[in-house]
Amino acid sequence: MGFTRAELDSFRDRTVPDLLPDPLRLLLVGINPGLISAATGVHFARRGNRFYPALHLAGITETVIDAGDGMSAADRAQLTDKGVGISNLCPRATARADELDDAELRAGVAHLTEIVTERAPEVVAILGITAFRTAFSRPKATLGWQDSPWEGTALYVAPNPSGLNAHAQVPDHAAAYAEIARAAGVI
Image (cartoon, rainbow, N blue to C red):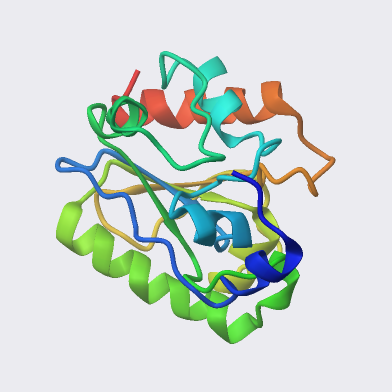
């Protein structure tokens, strides 16, 4: 599915529904949806994003999900059947995460708290250290396990899988995802 710049811009500020299976064991939390995700209705839909290849390499999915044209029921089941959900700190779609302001990121913690209170996942993983630092008011946080604000739910921060993050590659993401998936009982 190809989009012109004007078509993509028409999806600015739209949202992508959370993927919340029942039961929810592992909640992967992006920063916010990109314009292609808003256009397709699927999280991490931009081809070249390292999210789905890393999930596969980590052993969470049986195949590499190609969400660039949306997500098939079979691909969605690879996640939901294992209790893997996806949400975002900020629901508003933008071309780049740096278009968000600090208040939007901080407001995302309340949304996550609602999900955790209702669904009680084993692990919540925030995918992006800079967004985590801002949202949770922890300016010196590092990647890895964090003190969780939610009793009974562990909190982990992994690198952002966007292609704009050159610091981590697919094997780095996969190692983090495998660690959190084991902790959540997904693999």
